[in-house]
Length: 238
Image 1 (cartoon, helix red, strand yellow):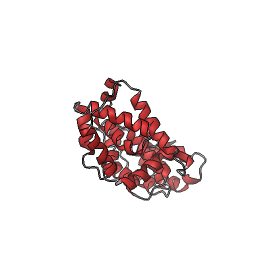
Image 2 (cartoon, rainbow, N blue to C red):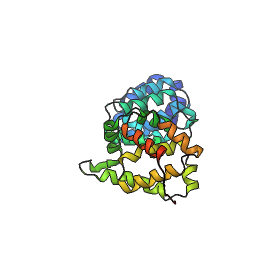
Image 3 (cartoon, rainbow, N blue to C red):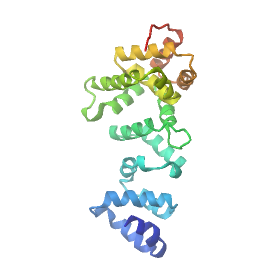
Image 4 (cartoon, rainbow, N blue to C red):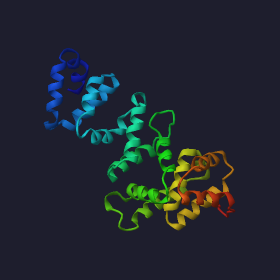
């Protein structure tokens, strides 16, 4: 039905499309219909329907729920601005998690939506702001009254540590830079082990590039991690 509305009805009966868009929020298939109408409108560059979708009160919810369906060929700088607005605006923890984990996986920097958006944001956060953000991302539905979120950060770093040296370096500079931003928020054992890895391999091009990415970080804790790596000597064997 979504294909029919965008590809045929929008051309032959524009007024009917307006009528449908005015009623669709009450339909049982609203969420699925909205998803595919919006995506098809973007793929077919139907600005009229796209604009109508973006005027819905719950557009932000639909948009974030379907981020993973925005293929590289339809991503634009407007999408970049939307995700930056979520990160920097008054967003819920769930919205922050949706954007974080989406960008966390987007390593191809040739796409408009990629991990550099997340890195640029993290670079601007001081230690207090960074702590609040990382808590929001790693606390899930459990809240952050306890330190369980730190265990989740440490769990992610533990997965990193379990990789071979070759695979760690193959992750590339953006992923390694994210690891550096996580360091101040992890438990001591994982933080120390990851720091030792960076100390030992600080002359590798991937590590150099990752550290350069964090050079302008506002967070004092991140800067202290970098200083420790630059000055450190390690017995790391992993």
